[in-house]
Amino acid sequence: MYITGAYQTQFGELWDKDLKDLIVESGEAAIKDSGIKRQDIDLVLVANMLAGNLEGQNHLGALAAELLGLSGVNAGRVEAACASGGVAVNQAITALKAKTAKNVLVIGAEKMTDKSNAEVSTGLMGAASGEERRAGLTFVGLYGLMARVYFDRFKMTKNDLAYVAVKNHKHASLNPKAQYPFAVDMETVLKSSCVASPLHLFDCSPITDGAAAVILTDKARSRRDIDIAASQVASDSLSLTERDSLVELKATKLAVQKAYREAGITSKSIDLAEVHDCFSIAEIMAVEDLGFCKKGDGFKKIRAGEFDHDGRLPVNLSGGLKACGHPVGATGVKQVVEIVTQLRGEAGKRQTKKAKIGLTHNVGGSGATAAVHILKKR
Amino acid sequence: MNSAIQIWRRQKLNYQHLGRTGAVISKTRIIEAPLGFKGPYWVVLVKLDRKTRLVGQWVDIIEPKIGMKVTGVLRRSGETGKAEAIEYGVKWVRGR
Image (cartoon, rainbow over all chains, first blue to last red; front, side, top):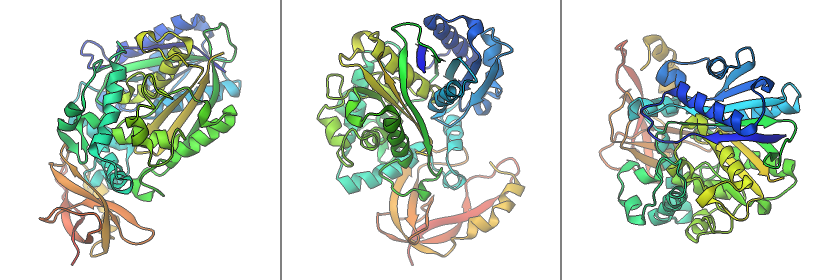
């Protein structure tokens, strides 16, 4: 299985674009990038979480097919909260493996900034349990509960946490499609207002409009095509209260263990990764759960620069969810686009030299779903 | 916001931890609240016994602390919606 086309729209507060504009721009550009004929696409999957909630627009598979001149094709929507994109790519690969499709277009798209923060925050909480909603929790609050336990168990400080945002903003400053393409210093992160303790504004990914699309195919056509070495999804309880541990995401560990097995490699083979840093604490847990370092060492390794652009294993060269932006349904697809761009050597100023095997890690809710992909340069 | 019938259906679940005691294992102060709530307020993660953990709002006058013994008390939940049905549930205070 291969990725033959990839494209990401500008991420940000896109006042002049609606969901349909984002679907058309990303879909058309991915088709063009792949070079395949439109009529050869036999499955369209749209990853989206909130359109029904925020815009009253469901039925996105048929809508995308219509907009892209593909009416008649098998088309549907995939929803797994913020992991919708990663799960949609996994579903596309499943269809290719089952030989029910030969060329699949996956579009992740989300329009979030037309509504108030409270409306978006309430919509996102649809990914949590009823008990968590009735307690007045938000996703910042849920990750705040995990962060509090992590702080105490591993003696992490707010300064340690702030390094995640500093790193990812530094990376985003090299990405013209990022929502926040500028660097920030420690003081800016530490002095930002509290959203849900202990997490501050700069520990949180933003509300973002944006889309990304990929074309997956069963046969490679050119040297630019990227090999899909593994695609795995795992799940856990919706509610934090049912989890075995509050300082790791079991779904991430299960998905990545399966992915390493499928690809026949270990974490040591990974050259770069895009991980789900919806909040700073999430990136720290992710680098540990993915096997890039030991549990409790994530913040130390980030602070030591191991996951910087010029570090041992660059993480979130796009700027991550924090600084590139987090249009929730699009994020998992955008992570794949970023790794494909890096493996092709087409990432411009943010290009990493050692890009042969890349990993994407996309999480839904507070860890109820995790999707992991391993991509290889041919 | 929930309808009267949804609230009625949840009654047994809403009150099951009333009067129970446990300990705070994590906490967060919500500043930016979702619809139906007015921040800021504390939410605590409480361990009742080896198997049972839950989340709920903190309604004591003192700040919750990790390890603090707590008790579940009956309080009004959130704001009323269009149906104007008032929902009650269990919130948490320092243990008595």
